[in-house]
Length: 330
Image (cartoon, rainbow, N blue to C red; front, top):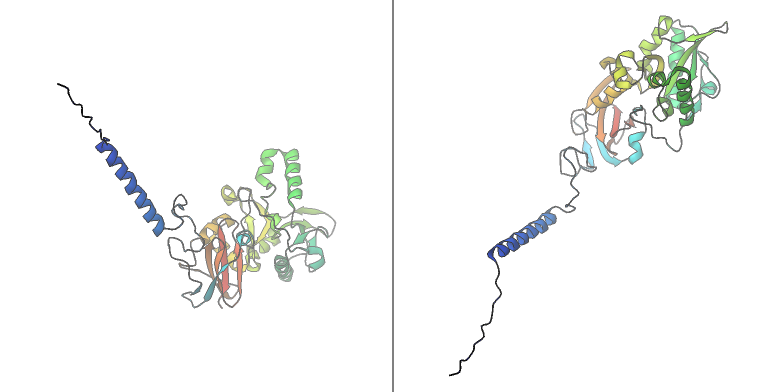
């Protein structure tokens, strides 16, 4: 008897575990596609919490409104001033830790050619920006009018990177590197690059000269300079913040309202820049009364800034992360 053979057709065996894994992969893929549909631009481009997003207010996913009126009634328009706005203006913080952003051009004038007769200047090459020069003229005229002597000599104004390099190396060679780091800013870290700074010295009628220390009759200048927009930039008790030792001869222009507020609060510029961040546009604004006028001040992170539609106002970057608007309201 012959046996008939029957071949069995063998089916494909699939493990239950393999089916489960495939299901999980498909579910994850579907979730990813849904997420990206709801959140365009997602997938690896997340912005860390607390970081600034241009076009949206801090802590909000909503686009910023183009036109807003402040609580005090100032109509403002959202304006993109461009990246350079953060690095220019009277309030830029410049130090060894926060280098200056050198512009292609600077508006500088000769002090010698535009000064009054109330003070001396080293030579015709000492340069300053026009607004702080005008303020310097008013301050020195008033110093003489209240009884001061014509002995103040402006010996330094704007400096190039190359000249600052020369000064730093010269101080290091003569006094040692540690001394240079304490008393001389490094190239790029000097406020003199801004054209907003003057250094004072003394020159007497008999041809002799001397250091300016802000004492005696000159104490009037150091105690009233904020009324003209200047501050004594480097005080001995702020060295841990500024990195520079006491320099009573070094004056920095920041504008009348901010100089007044800095002196009233006892702040150096490093502290003041941090302080201004407490007054964002979408929060409480800072009010300053100075020189018989009232100012409203706010800070905007980045270069998208709310600017008043009318009136007198100034705009300055802080050279770090944003822009400060100072609006005259009375």
